[in-house]
Each structure stands twice: as C-alpha cells, then as structure tokens.
Image (cartoon, rainbow, N blue to C red; front, top):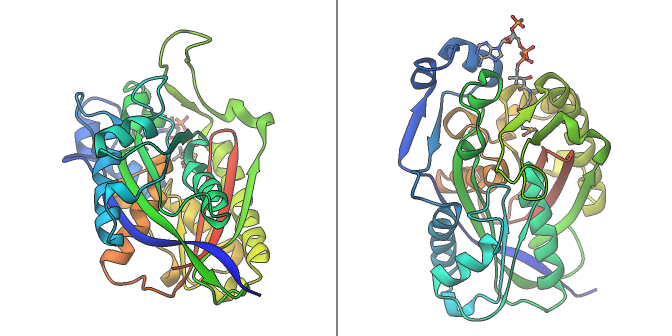
Length: 325
Ligand code: ACO
C-alpha cells in the first residue's frame, strides 16, 4: 500500500559562542565540577548573549538545515518552532524566524511542550506533510534556558544551556512498512497533575514577569526514567518495530544518569545511545536535534538508519518518535 510519509531531508544546528564550564559556575554559586559531573555528566554549556534572542539561534540552525536539504527559503511553506523561551510572549518565534529568513507567507507557529517540544512539533509537522498540506517544513527546537535561571539556585542553574537544532521535512512515498524513509510512529503523553514538579514561577497572566525555573529534581528524575521507557516502547509499537530494530537512540539530553537509567530499564546497547549532555547540558526542546546533528556530522548516524527520539519535560510531558532517516 503506497503511503506518503514525512521524511527528514536536511538537518542543522547552532550553539552560541560563549562556553560556560562547571568551574565558571563554581565561582559564584556553591557547587563544584566534581558534583555536577558525577550527578549529571555535564561538563559545560553554551550561553547566548543578552542581545541574541532565541529566534537568532533558530535562524542559524534553519539556514544550515535548508542548505543540507538543498532547499531555499522560498521552498519553505511551514515553520514550527518548539520553544519554551520565546523572544516575546507573542508573536511566535516561528513568525520572527520566517521574517528573518526572508521566507514568504506560509504557516508559522510555536509548540510549547518544554523539553518534549521537538518530538511534539515533529508529530504536528508530520500531520501537515503526510497529508499534503506542506511540501517543505522547517521544524526547529530553539532554547535559551540560561535566561530562565535563578543563578542563586545551585539545584537548577548548573543543569541548562542554550542552542538550536532544525530539520527539514519533505514528503516521501513509501510502502507502509518500517522500511519506508520517514516518520514511522509516535507516542505523545502529558500528565498535568504533575505540573508542580517542574515549572517557571512567572508568566503574563499571573506575575507579569518571565519568572525562574523551579524543579523537584529527585521526583522529576524518577518519573523521567519510567515515562521515557514507556514512551520508547509505545513508539516502537506504533511503528511496528522491535526495540532491537533501532540503530540509534537519540534521547533528550537532560542528565547522563537519566539516559543510563532508561538504557538499563530497557536493556539498550549503550553504544547505540547518542549523548551530548557533557558539552551541551540540557537545552530543552533543542537537545534532540542538536544531538542528532552531532551524530550525523561525526558519521555515526547514516541515511537509512532507524532512529528513536525520546524526551520528557515540564508538564509533565513526554514522548518518542521512531523514524527512518
Ligand atoms: N552542587 C553541589 N551540591 C548540590 C547541587 C550543586 N549544583 N545541587 C544540589 N546539591 C546538593 C543538595 O543540596 C543536597 O545536599 P544535602 O544532602 O545537604 O541536602 C545534595 O546535593 C543532594 O541533592 P539531590 O537533589 O538529592 O541530588 P540528586 O542526586 O537528586 O541530583 C539532580 C540532583 C541532578 C537535579 C537530579 O535530581 C536530576 O538530575 N534530576 C532530574 C532533573 C532534570 O534533569 N531535569 C531537567 C528538566 S526535566 C528533563 O529534562 C527530563
């Protein structure tokens, strides 16, 4: 049976120039490189300039993804940005990106599912592309989490970083099997009863301020391992594949111990798990496309490989996506 799938045909990413090491943080908050590395695996993070909004990071990643796909801005008819750190409350970062890229009138909006945002945004874009409503979609994860930090709170400020990753999605014809190129299966979840475990204590309709990120780290950790493992299993079932069929797991990069905990729970081969948490830290919705791009650029992930993306974040939201590159 012939089916139209949305397929990743280009990828790009961008990290701001400034690198902040654990030792840099230890100069003004009561922490140490040893503690941060042991508990999280993080060695450093990138930090955007004060005058460099999220849309600038998104645009840099988008330009690289379009070049990689052999497309120009005039081809783009849909832009979805997954972000929890928009330039402004509105308009959407996607609209600003559209203008900065010089793309013509099309569809542009943001998706807000915090660290799961990129997986959520991919599923939304998949709906447009697979139904013939978009011929060339840009899906971007872009975040400046450092701008949500309370720099006096050592339990959160050491964990996050800034960055952006983008993919181009185009329609590809398939046979309706897991050999097809493109998106094969999604599992998306949210449990709003746990919003208090990870949230920002501000907003336009409450405090009128941006606010700072607050987290019950221990509890989030426990939910992360269980929920992500469930999401991976469900996405494999939706794609009609076994976990053993997956060539590469590209997890949300929150914490090396979460990545390992999920791997142990599902018996994953650690050589198949991509980790960039040491150098990127947690870039929320940007972390998956950043990690995917890193592993494609260094030659580990190749065209035709079966990829499993998975994430969990504030909401609580979580999800996974199986795709063939
Ligand atoms: N430096 C030094 N000491 C610290 C720091 C720090 N940066 N942060 C906390 N501590 C101290 C605590 O105060 C505590 O001290 P105490 O025993 O005297 O009270 C001690 O270290 C242990 O604190 P815990 O919170 O129990 O440490 P834990 O091992 O749970 O690690 C961490 C904390 C890293 C936040 C962990 O819980 C975690 O990774 N949780 C997952 C949260 C996460 O990654 N969220 C990201 C967003 S959600 C997502 O993306 C999945």
